[in-house]
Image (tube, rainbow, N blue to C red):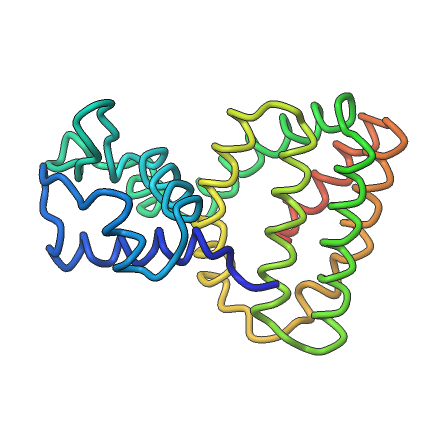
Length: 215
């Protein structure tokens, strides 16, 4: 599973900000120009801007436009989290996923289960093909699917924003092969089954194993 197009565009805009193409406090181009600059449609631009606004990199002012946040006082949560050590990041991940799993057990729909199952199938296929990046993408997509199943859009958005930190999380562990994902695949399947069968205690126990082993 490849990175979402809107995430790719968000990363390009973030890079352009880092390279001072758009400077602190400056208004970025309007949607039509951004569509031409990055070669994507309006919905993709809007989703990318939403992601960057959620992490504090951009500030959307109704009637005025979208501006680059600047200064130390505007340092994003994303930037602060990247300074955290491995255990601190894992603690934040546990805090978020404890709540998403708890709510997913109660609020999931059949469509949510279909999405989770497809993510796990993508994860399994990536393991069999020994495609590390595809394993990372499918793993993150599965946990995002669980967050969506919570039926709390704000929580799901926060978790999705946190996935860029989780990607670094995997990188810091210097994972060199798919064995890391193969060893934990059965746990992810058990987590989905516990959510499906509305077994909250079991779901939390399985999640604890996943996080305790840094899977």
